[in-house]
Image (cartoon, rainbow, N blue to C red):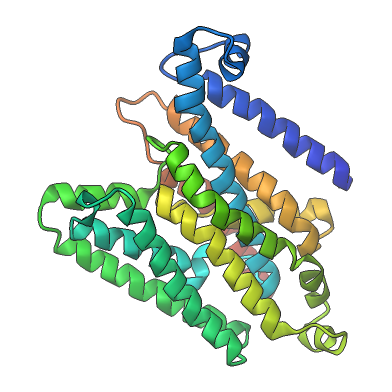
Length: 331
């Protein structure tokens, strides 16, 4: 049975609210729901206000932002490429952003300013986007776009591995590895405000592609005959995905598989319509990242696991099931 649209939004929204309250309450200093609300409203003890407003709330809001960006970007790319295996990393934007951050860590540029790392990550993501945008301007088809993304990702990953190999000292290598694993820990409002404007523009750009992505399900030739400009659609989706993925990688590191898992889970509930999948994937992505970050904090270990590891453990079974399903269809 498929949930109607409003019911699906309500279900995801309510789940997100409850999970957010749980994330605000759970931590080294456990708080009740009433204490969380008092902390948010500024009517409780000063200690509770500090914990809720300054430490936990920015982390929750950043989880919303990262999850929404990755979820909608994944849904848009899958709709554009008409491939359920597509996700933001497929175009090489994530790997390029990671390379920019790794270069700043490798050369010690973060000592100049903490803003150097996210700015470098954004610049490298934009370079990758400009290359892909140039291909779409030249009339490249979906397969060429995918192959170019794979080439970019492989090149960026190779340079990242080279930086690790020649890291000046073990401490620098450890910093690079930990950043690549992705985490929301020790992130605050500064990181949130840095990524928010770019992500909002990216989400708006991807949302504007909803009707065109629905039209594309008829096939490229049919969609073109109905007035769809495929070149412009590819450019808008690639640019929107870059605006969503680049800033999130810049502030949290690499958090993979969100853009793969969320659209896969929610697609049947929207009638397999790519356009309708975009907004619900944003909600679902926020829910998944928040749940994974909450799981990270609940693991009874001396050191908090990295968020990217948790999302990879969640996403790998989905990826294998999709891959096996497609193989059976080929057979």
